Length: 74
Image (cartoon, rainbow, N blue to C red):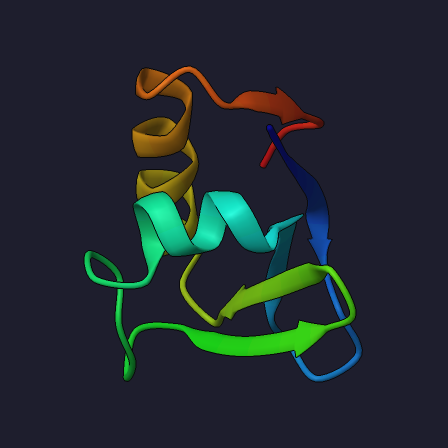
């Protein structure tokens, strides 16, 4: 179980985290919902986007507390 994050915004101005569908279903779906974040499911991965760095940082800290490996930093 992992979540990948990067310090830079994408071309649309979103901070992005990428995780597996399993992590998303288990920890994210019911706790972090729009309008704070945008969810895009592609294949077996889920892209979690937010214009707010603090919202995405809160999500990453929550996932880390649940034992999910964080790759990168924000």
